[in-house]
Image (cartoon, rainbow, N blue to C red; front, side, top):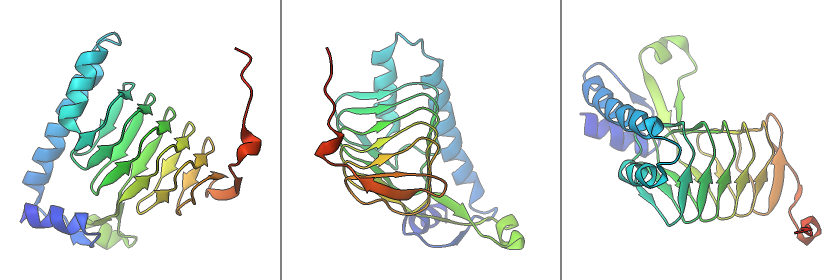
Amino acid sequence: MAKDLFELLGAGCWVYGGAKDLPEVSRRLQVCADACFKINSLRPSETGRREESLRKLLGSAGENLVINPPFRCDFGYNIHIGNNFVGNFNLTILDEARVDIGDNVMIGPNCTLVTITHAMLPGQRNDGIMRALPVKIGDNAWLASNVVVLPGVTIGESAVIGAGSVVTKSVPSHTFAAGNPCRPIRPVTELDRVEPVV
């Protein structure tokens, strides 16, 4: 039954996470929590061991994976990350559904990616009725600090999300978006090119 629950969650269906399913859900959550604890307990200088442990936890990850601790996720195996990823301190990913992160993505400190949502009516919520929708972040996107991305959101290629944003709807590629709720503000263009002094 737990397998069916996870398959239905992954398909975006509303499901009842009743008591008969909780042992397997609890077991998987505990395995992931223990793995995150181990990763977060490593010394800052133990980058090789941290990366090795992250690769075991995640569904897949490309070259040059950097996630600064502490890092939290629910299951790990639903997270798929491309090449040259940097996730700063306090990255949280609630991965009841699939999370796809493209190449050359930067995520600032204190960001949260959420795939799970619960029923609005308290009686249904108390019964454990929930739904999960995938999150996707395109190549070359940058999420500044304290960004929250909600279930079902796609952030397009080369998009920039301003600090403190709550992203409730998908953001087009090559767009600067910010706010609570997050809204597109303007295109990202060659006019944004800067000239480094060094």
